[in-house]
Length: 122
Image (tube, rainbow, N blue to C red; front, side):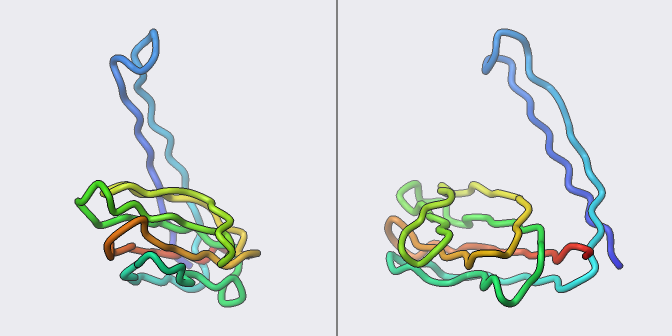
């Protein structure tokens, strides 16, 4: 088994009335598949993670584009059930129950979506 240590730090001097400055850290046990891949997206929805292939996992997604118009939409189904948007350079790390397939498409262009999946301990 492997251990993954995610760490999130949020800081801002002007987002709230008081200064924002905190860090949250966790320790996650990884006992299954670890997948790292890059997918070239387009304006056509494409499957990026098939639910049937994995159990509960932690997923990291990163829009590698630097062009502001190249927004990647992550969908919970091919029918356009939008889950999140990732602008150029944006990323997300989240737990995934693997009960629905994840699809991606782009608003324009062909931005690259970096994907890392860490299958959790049962």
